[in-house]
Length: 81
Image 1 (cartoon, rainbow, N blue to C red):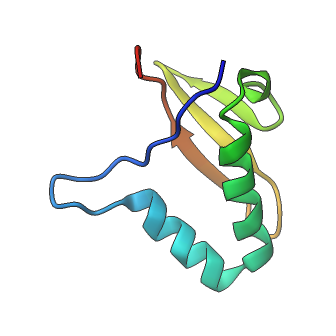
Image 2: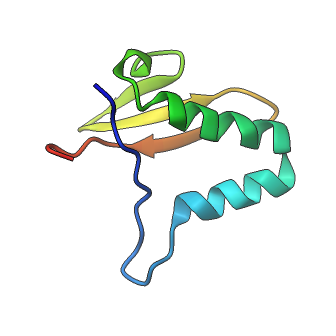
Image 3: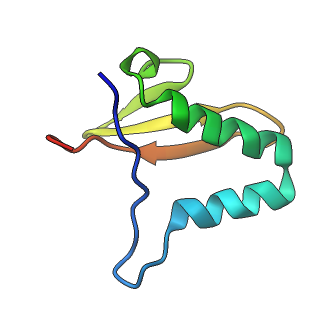
């Protein structure tokens, strides 16, 4: 099974994840490269476990990257999506 990744947006069209990625790209290109790569791996259910991914409760999960700047990207699943 392959999942689709969609970034959430606020009512005004702001996308916090894209802003975070833009800031990370400017401040640390190596860590930046790891985050989209991790997001891409999440399309496959085999990566939905540590060390890449971890449940933090109430249906929320975190994509984890340890590097110069440790990053956490929160995500969740939507049924039938």
